[in-house]
Length: 572
Image (cartoon, rainbow, N blue to C red):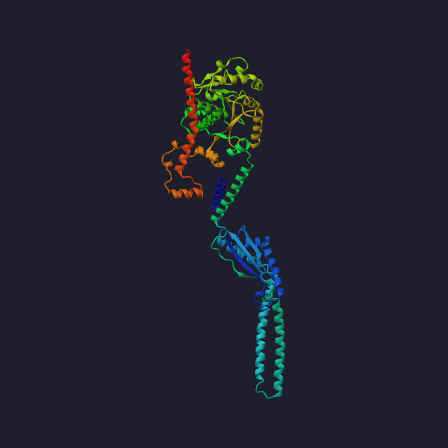
């Protein structure tokens, strides 16, 4: 659409400033065979060859220079001189922004071309033609006088009886006849070399016209054509980029490559400064609901399999794994669960910045036996709901430290103290992440749509399978509304659908379709359009299905805790 708009705007601007062009046309003919009732084919052929020569001469510099000098101008607009196909005519067309100027220049070009004809006065051949014309006029008068004299002599023979007079008059008639024949021969000879009988002669058959309407393609057609071309190029480029883009973008890509579900869609966080604690400060936001849905999906796994330690990692740095880990921990802590979040990224620790807690001491100090677990675990905002184990001082041999059995013992000890341990691990481009993944109950892979190539994703899957890690699923992070429309993924679009978050929109926007049931049924079968009231009921049912197991687990935990408390009271 951007390319289309740019093409339309550019063509509109260019056509707006483009001046209108007017064309004036004049036509010349070679020779006078067109006036001959019995033209000779040889003469017509010669005239056509001469027309080609004159058309070429009209495009030469001498004709151009002579035209400019005659009109007193220093330039000529664009013009063409060509032979009309299969004729002996030369057509000169002049294109200019001023109609009158186009007409004047076309006429002058024709005039200068006619001056090159051998029958035009002002030249040596022209003077000769003037002399021939004078002689022809004189011979014409003499022929007419002679014919008149012969006619009078023939009339005088009537009524004469004298033989001598008749012989004298007949003698005069013979002399006048010989003289007439001589005049006619001379006249025919001169006529063959005159303008009237010449083949190499130019004459105007169509003077240059004064154009009233501009020529060229309609401006609106040009703009529409530019828009069509821009749309075609933009669409082709979009499909080409989509074809060349071999990245993981949708849930179908995840299922095809990993064979795993997408268990969470996290919308983009606009507040980067407080991104690590966003759900705590905005509990009623759509993003907070995203994390609650992610928590519900995790609970489904915990129903059938005991999961006490969850590792959060990502294919690359910057996919938002730390943000997901910290907000997920805060979201789960609202359910009155004892949670600890561990920063196991000893190369580039970030949990202390996300939760605004001191970095030292931390996990690295425990690994190097410089401190015990209880002394380094910190409470977030003096709240017993969530504990934090930061990274501490970065050791020089990170890989050896992370790959040691000591960290497995630490995680095992934390499982006994807390209901859930969330581990923020390094990205999977570092071997530390695979060592940690093999020591936890479940792995959550945080991916940003369109940032991980399929080849990289397949390599990650092979490495995780080789390490024996159990991947719970994929979390798509930083999902924007543009991505939802670009990738056309229903689950992306659900993040921004008014139906999906009915509590956050006005009642007016959620009014059900008031059309008849028959009309709604026809819309469903013809266009796949689900009635609004049915869609709302389905969404409520899905929400209930998702939240019911979570509520059941909460009740079981509370009953278990209360039973343990009563037992301890009795023992006391």
